[in-house]
Image 1: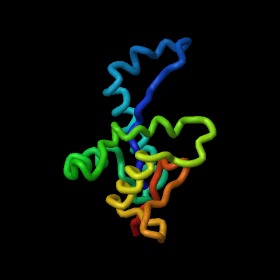
Image 2: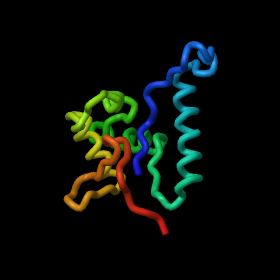
Image 3: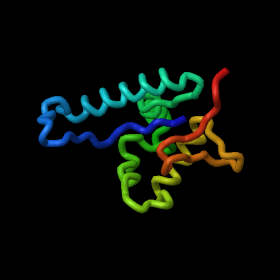
Length: 123
């Protein structure tokens, strides 16, 4: 399962957590690491591909795989989204194939609005 990095982190102003989510890049990486720990603990049988691995893959295949931070996954938060638009859709399909995901038709299997790709299971 491909887990894309978070691109947005906000706090309710009444909570006064602004200092906890600054600087932005550190807060996003920390949140990604917490999600990674949670997923690997709760579903160890899944073959997770975490944001750090996605970044490494993009550095090794420039021009072929988009930087996961620049893929525009934020548009997946849009209300009423029924189809993932290009170029994000094609970027996610390429990423899924690179991670070994397959929907039986040669493409990546997408779930929950394309946020995760189904991949091989361990064991």
